[in-house]
Image 1 (cartoon, one colour):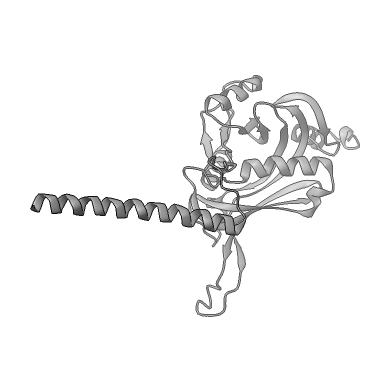
Image 2 (image 1 turned 135 degrees about the horizontal axis):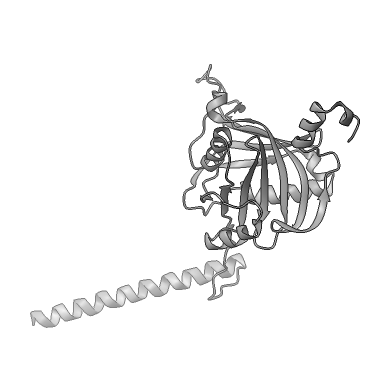
Length: 278
């Protein structure tokens, strides 16, 4: 008799569980119909921002150039750093290196005569690519600014209105957005936004600055919220030289007529006869 009662209780509990499941499904259908949402069996796929950047340099970089690369690696958690490239003439190997490292962007720093630094910003493997001359480099350790940010945090990318006035500015803005914009799905990124990367065009040059976003005044911690910017570093100036259609080569899309190479400037300073040339 006791075994029959236990069996009846078990069957009753199973029926209640099945009834609850049915009621929940019915309620979900009613709510979906009331909101006017079409219920389909296939969930919608969200578009993911899968951007990874390969960071490497050529042989012959100085300590300041190396510290600048370390600062950029600390600011961009989606960067994959690789060893130095031996040959400066075989830039066609860079798209293959980016493909091997599962990267679709490349930042390549090319040093010339241990003094001049050039930066290549490219979309791999199909391009475009931008060659820029890096000047007035100041690293974080050199500046010793009071600003600070969490390592691995995502930063806002801000561009000056002057980027929208020219075609090369719009193209550069799009390339920099995909390189310096940290995706939310990056494995090493943290879900915080506490700094902002700014790009401004002054005298046909691109000025880079990095600021910390502070929501309270440090002198008045109990005061009202007030958003301010405090510079962190690094800072540098980029002079666009040429934009290519492909990755590290191809047809020339834009050529800066006002760009003057450092070697020519050095020759002109030592030779007065060249002072009126260019």
